[in-house]
Length: 150
Length: 205
Image (cartoon, rainbow over all chains, first blue to last red; front, side, top):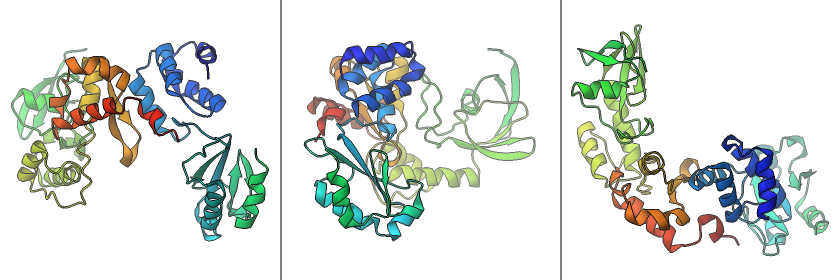
């Protein structure tokens, strides 16, 4: 993400320090992660110390300080999904993508994340890719679901 | 700030304090000792370590408050030592000791309050999150070279390498502030410079 675009976002919020989280969220959603250079730019633009930005960016799980894949896989490990075999789904996805929860593969295709509830327990086990819900999924069906993504 | 006088009672003595003072300041002004770890007179009150917990009685109700952040008020009765207070300080110490079992300050306090340093499983991070180094750097030095990262049980202090490499060599004033070991901040500082790229760029793959 180039500095010009970051400056545009900063300008939108009038460089107000209180809008730090909004700025971070926008950069995160456009760039999928927060590079160090972007944080430094934001630090200058909002006059917020880098240490404080680091504190906030590492506090919220919505922010990532490492590159994320083009597609985000969320696998629900909540109680309902768990008893319906979420672990098997997770194992299969780990095997297919070759990454563990919290990681991103080398060609930045997938990021894998476990979550605690997606709010649709009746559909368990649930896998969510880029916000799209795959409900009542079996380990064998995950391969088909993953193939659709480039 | 209004400088009206307030009378309160600490450990049975009537004390005159001015509005806006904390219980801790009022107690110190007459030489009553309340143990502290995260308190520093140059810094804003933080209320992080809870070792200064005292019993405060207002209108017949007793509550446990942190003396370093609780402002004095009229007709306040404070007990700085009681069975309850001692029990809480003992527990706080035991919890802190699981992080920093060899800290001199903690060991001294543990002796006084009968805290057992082996009460909890050790997770010797040597940091009790008092925030002294972080707050000193931000409030007194205004450099913000050190800050907290992560949250909950993973929370730790972290030097920002770009700033630390420039500012810290000639300062190092935060090192002796540490209640667990003067070397703790030094260690994290060195670590941040050795891994010269900032933490958000190291484990990218």
